[in-house]
Amino acid sequence: MQLFSCQSCDQVLFFENTACERCGHKLGYLPTINSLSALTSTDGGLAWHALDPRADDGPYRFCANHAHDACNWLIPASQQGQEFCIACQFNRTIPNLSVPGNLERWRKIEVAKHRLFYTLLRLHLPMHTRREDPRDGLVFDFLDDVPHETPVMTGHQNGLITIALREADDAQREKMRMEMGEHYRTLLGHFRHEIGHYYWNLLVRDGQWLAQCRAIFGDDRMDYQQALQRHYENGPPKGWRTQYVSEYATCHPWEDFAETWAHYLHIVSTLETAWAYGMTVREQPGNPHTLRAMMTDNPYDVATFDTIAQGWLPLTYAVNSLNRSMGLADFYPFVLTPAILRKLDFIHQLVQAARTQ
Image (cartoon, rainbow, N blue to C red):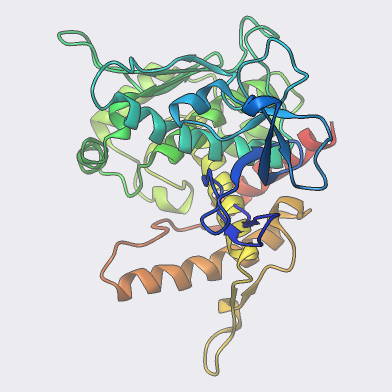
């Protein structure tokens, strides 16, 4: 995530900010130019002008979810009949906001979802609504459990991504993380994993990459339900860490792809943040050269994955060590072996090909 600055007073701004703490200007995000812009009201406060000089002259209005403090993205006021921004127009079901606590849970979900869409837009990845693609178009349901019924499962099916509302409860999510034996479980991680299934359908199954994908991740035609049952009964195979980024990735090629896709998004997003802050990991006397990392370009614009990996691995070593110095768990509790890096390189090639189209 890049850093932003107020066009009125140069105060540093962050992605979720809705007002400048220094000058008080209202803020809105313009996805078409990747700008968090200071705003001035017009039309009696019903519309807004952006102070970013790159913005169009025409006024803007906020996404309808701004009324719930769940979105700070803008829409051109000229887009008649469009209530929701590009990130929120894919929502199909949101929680019942009359239930105590659901508004705050939904806001947490939207923070994660908007960060996902920031990355998808920065990567110029295609995405189709259910109106554009009634069978496989992207759509989100954020669902709460119903008493005496089967609990909601977070997952993906033919473009429909379901996020269980309990995942927005930190205590519940941590409990599930421990019960599932996972190193990492976050709302943003769920979104990045599930969108990986969507892009497997869109870019691999319906694209030109199926044979190459099967050569790297395995044959996706194996029975998925049997593979899941075998995984939960027997656990991962011995030596899995040399080939898979997580235990869950071992259960089926679809899950291997989705887990690797999620890690690719973790990497480029985090590296952009490090790049925005000008962070480097420099070699010290006596330390191996491999501990040096310096990202001179935004990772979203890097042509080869090898350049990304050279920046990522030393950064994780450094930040993991910083966390341990504070008595915290590792920032990135994963090991990227040559086999896993090859899979990440495939994801990078897939993304780059989609961008050129």
